[in-house]
Image (cartoon, one colour):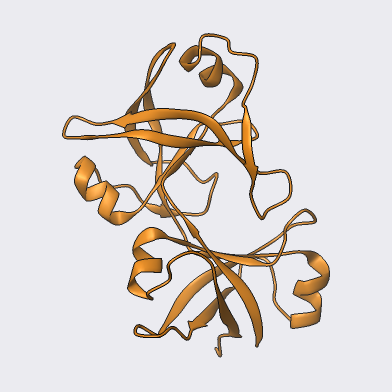
Length: 193
């Protein structure tokens, strides 16, 4: 059991180099506006429209750096608004995920897969994981003590990598359920059984 930073991950897009070039007309690269808590990740100035047959979200932030595959992360509320049914997945697990259209200033792309609801997860570096007895891929719980909506989240997947900084990522639906406005502190608990 230990205290850990809890952050809100709002809807966003990760782009492949090919898709970035098509959507932004070969623009020279992502323009960083601020660093995020995980090393090397940043919010870019560039935004896109995420569109489906039913609705669309404008000005969806692109997160850098560019990745091997394009991925759109939304909440369940977002999915209902868009009229789609994406799976709950860990980032990068895109097989059988939902489709959408991405529209940028330089063009549009029909994405045949890539829309997911991100599985809530706990980033850990290897040293912290060892010290706390947590292993990559296991599920833990995170207890949130908030003013009006204290909540315990179960099935929080542990992700361990050298470049990770300890932090829990929740989507906007989960954060709202617990009354979290920006960042907060939670208690990561090893599940029994």
